[in-house]
Length: 522
Image (tube, rainbow, N blue to C red; front, side):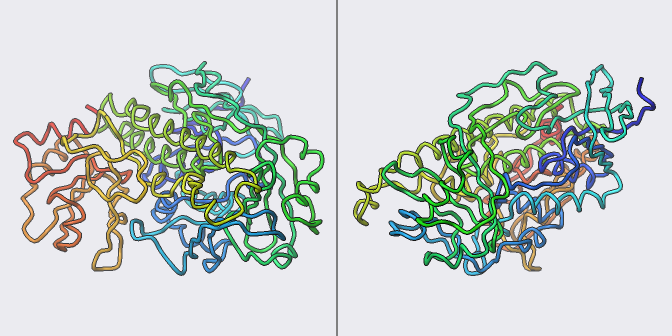
C-alpha cells in the first residue's frame, strides 16, 4: 500500500522539455504542480538541436532566453545549409544563412537558436527549480492512475528506495513521450502513417573535425552521393560535439565509423559517444484527452525531426493548456475552455507533422550526384522544400477555435513562404518594438491584455468592466505609436495569455459580456 498521499493541483507525468515548459508556465501563474519523471533528469544524447523562434519567445517570457542563446553555439557561427559530396569533396551548393549576430529577423524579438537538448533541458530545469510552486520527483514512476469527477489519484514508486506514495491532483497531464503510459491507459490510438524510416543517430566527439575540411561552420551539412541525400551532419556545440543522422540505413548502427567515413571522405578521428537506431514516425493521437486527464508533446504527436517541429509543437501545447488550467482552477474558466485545447492544437500538430514528413521525403528525393553537378541543376531543385521555415512553425493560426471571435476577414496562409504579420483573430500577436526597447510580445503572458492603439483609440471601459464581472484577469495597455498601430491593424486588439489574438475591432460591441464569455469558454 502507498505510504502517504500528497496533494497537488496539476500532476505532470514526464520531465522532458514539454513537461518542464508546462511546469514553468504553471509555476509562474501561481499554480502548484508536481512533475514525476522516471529518469534521473540527466541527458547524455541530444535528441533535438534547435530551439525555434517561438520557443525562444517563450524562453524570453521565462527569463532564460539569454542563457539558452549563449549556452554553447556561437552567435557568430554561420547557419548555412551545405549540400556536398563529402566534407572533403565537392561542395554542390549552399543556402546561405547569416549568423544571429549578423542578421536578426524582424518578425520576432528573438529568432531561433542552436541549443541542443543536452544543454537546453538543464537550463529550463534550473528555472523550474526556482519556482516554489513546482515539486519535481526524479527517479519516480507512475504505476497507474484513476480519474473521478473531482480529480485524479495516481500511485507512484520511488525507484531507488522502492517506496510507494499516492498523489492526488485536480488534473493530470501526460508529457511522457512517444511511448506514453498515460495515453495507453486512456486507450487513445494513434493516427497517421506510423513508421516512415529506420534511422541511426551517431553522436561523437571530434575537436579536430572542424579543421579537417574547408566548408566552415554551418547549421547542417548534407552529403549527397550516388544514392542521393542519405544523411545529415549537425554540429552540436559548435566546438567538438557532432551528430550524424543516417536517414534510412539500419546497418550503420553496427558500423558507425563507416558512416562517418562515407560522410567525410576520410577516416574521422573521434570518440563515438553513442549509436542509436530509432524509428522515424508520422502520428497524431486520435484525441488529446478529456475532463481531468490530458496529453501534450510526443505523447500526442510524433514527427520526423528533419522539420524541427517536434519540441516546438509540444512547447506551444504546454503554454496553451497552462493558462486554461489556471483559468479553471481559479474559477473563471468555463466548461468549454479545456476542451478547446484539442480543437486548437490538434490541427496545428497535424499540419506540423505533415510538413515534417514532406520535408523528410523531399530531402530523400534529392537526385544522386551524377544528376546534380552544376549550379543550373541545383536551380531546378526546390531547396526551400527541404526545411520548414521557422516562421511557419512559430506563427500558427488557431482556425475555427470555439473561444476566439472570428471577424470574417480572409484566412491566413497555412504555410506561407514569408512571415505574415497579422492580428486576425487566432493569429499570434505581432512583434513590434516599443519606445522603451521592449517588444509588444513582452506585454503578454499574464492574463489577457487589451491593447488600445493609435493617438485616439476608442474607449474600452465596458470590456474591462465585463472582464471584471466574470473574474477574468485583464490589463489595458495604450500604445499611441502609429507605426505599432498600423502593424496591429485595428485600434482595439485583445490578446490571450499564449500570445494569440482573441478578438479585435474598431469599436466595442453593445454586449461585451458576450466577448468575455466566449474567450473564457463559457
